[in-house]
Every structure is written in structure tokens, then in C-alpha cells.
Image 1 (tube, rainbow, N blue to C red):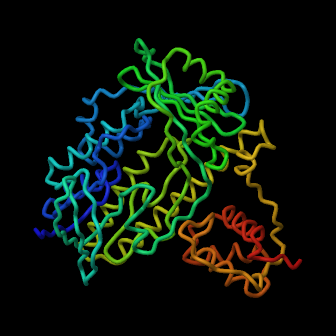
Image 2: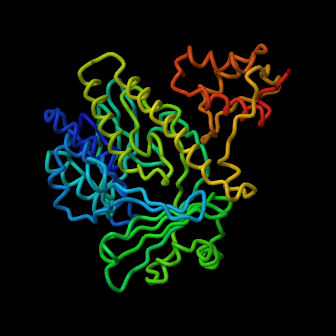
Image 3: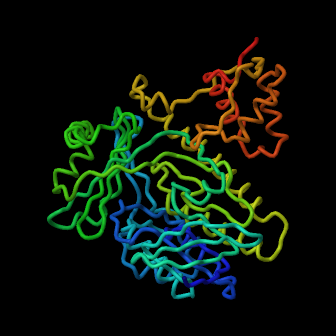
Length: 447
């Protein structure tokens, strides 16, 4: 069996992994980079809108001018029916970076990977990487190619860019902390003639979630219904429920009647989640493997590329022997994710038309706990480590339960967070965490 070695192994060829490779090879061409992706690159992907700020990432990566020649559709902004029946526009027109872009995600991913390979990255589609051994300074993998051929690969540093499965990071002991169970139920439609060039993306709220639609190249229209996994229909009822729910969103339906459905309905996870550990000895997680964002934010690819670039800087600092480079990377991403959770919460609070419906009740988290409420850890509190946790990482939950091992006012627990290594967590999120632990009976209120 052939055996090779690489400085950096990137598991996943999406925007995060490809951006990390591009930045590494631009800043340190002497480092060897290998990218392994288990998919064949042919899977259909729902389109996304890139914000104008994507230029700020592409310029330092050295791919801006080539991207502009890719002829993706320009996007002047997004329309939204949110909070009331009015159709509101969020224009990119007056932003200094110009318009955004409506992209074919499959083609965009291929563009990034091609740029990375042209700079020297070795790349395999349709291959799997199995960790077989960890020795000091090296990870040992068995690589199985798309034709079944096997080889041994040794890597000094590993980047988990495998998407929300975070397969390698999970092997290393990281756990997913989930903040909802959002699911995307989607399909493509096709227009007989190209739609208007200025057709904006559309977000439209409904009783059981919200809808997204956007035109794509090749006369396609991507349409997605976002709801919670337990509210989604079973496969046998998908088509019937799709048509029924579609009738309730007038503006989305008006788009669909102009087109024909193309292909079957697909269901993908879309939950907001973040790993409780973003790095370990000789590895980091980037992109969706590290943290995923609500599609409502329209920041998925932007955030993935940004974390890939930050991850590249952390990797370079690791090879340069600098102090705690991976810890600094994690702290940066945690602060960014806490900011995202705040913005996400405020946006969902704006929609109050269906306060009794389960989807919206779950997202209207309000602070009800008095700062003077005295809390104590419940005597029969069970501290377990499920593969997927909700709202709190192991470290955060342990810190709260230990802090409340003797009765403490809620405001003192919040202050303790501020003085701890967990200070990235905002006060509002700490209070919501306390309410969550009270609800699951891990904490008790004694006064």
C-alpha cells in the first residue's frame, strides 16, 4: 500500500476548506496541502446569495477578478414578508461594495477548489479518510479512493471542514451544541423563459416557519420551506403538505405558478449548532463543521469562507510555533457566534403574528428570571455527555452547576461568567441558559 505524507490534511472541499487552502498556499507555498472530499462534487445544491462584503474575503485570497468572470447572477438584495403583510426590500444598491450575487453553489465550490489545486493543493473527490492511528506529531489515515484503491497518508495537521457532521472533530471528542431543529424542505422549479434579471430573493414567514425562493442560472428557481424537524411532514405526505403550505404564502406562490417543478422534494438539516470544542492537539474545525448559521442570515458561505481564512492564520501560527494560536482562533469564533445568536433572536422576535404556534414559540425566548432569584444545583442533577447537546456546551453547563453548588443569586452567576474563560457568552445568553437548566430541573430556585 502506497504511503505519503502531507503537512496539512483538509477533510472537506466546501467554501471553508477551499478558502483555508487558498490562504495557506498564498502565504506559505512551502507547506504541502491535501484536500479529501467524500462526495463526487455532482450533488445538487440549493442556491445561495453572496453579500457584497464577499469581496473583502476574495481580494486577500487573490480570486476576486476570476470570480467576477464566472458570470453569476447579480443580486440587488432580498425582499421579505416578515412581521406583517407588507413586502419590504433590503437593497444592496447603496452599499459601497456594490451588489451581491445569486450563485450556483455546486459551480462555486468547484471554482474555489480549482483555484486551490492550481496553487499546488493535492485533491481527491469521492475519497474517504479513516483515522487509523495518532502518534506524536502525526495523524495516520487510510485513504480509500473512488475506485476502491487504498493508500496510507500521514498528516502533521488536520482541518475538519466536513460540514455539519463534523466527523473528525467528533472522533476527537468534540460535541455539537444545537440551538434549534430547523430543517430545509426544498426543490427546484424551472421557468420556460429566463425570469426578470432584477428578481430579488424572497423570504416569507408563515405559521409553521418561513419560505425562501431565489432565481438561479439556467432558468431555475430554488424554493425552500424552513420548519422544525418534528413539524415536517413524513415522506409519504411531503408533496401534499408542500402544496398546502405553499398556498399560505402568497408572494412565494406567485413565483411558483410561473414555473414547473423540476425534481423531487429534498430534506436537509439546517439547525444552528456549534461545536463545544473547535480545536485540539494538531487539529481545528472550520466552516459548518465548527458552527452553522440559520439560512435566514444569508451568511452561510460568507461565514464559512471567513472561518476558513481565520483557520488558515491559526494554522500558520501553529507551524510558526506561536503561543496558543488555536485557542485564539476558537475565542474569536465563539464571540462571533454569540453575536450571531443575539441577532438571530432579535430577528425572530420581529415576527409576532403566530404567537401560539409551536415554531414561533420556540424562538420567542424572553428573559423571565429575576436577577435576584437564588439558584442552586439540584441534588439529583445528572451530568451526561450526549453526542448532541442543546443550548449549552459541557464546559458551560459544568461551570453553572459548579457555581451554583451553593445557593447564588442569578446576577452573581452572570458576573461569574464575565470573570471566567467563558466570558465570550453574552449576559442575555447566560440568563437564557439558567432558565433552560431550571426547566430541565438541573437547577432549582430556592427564593
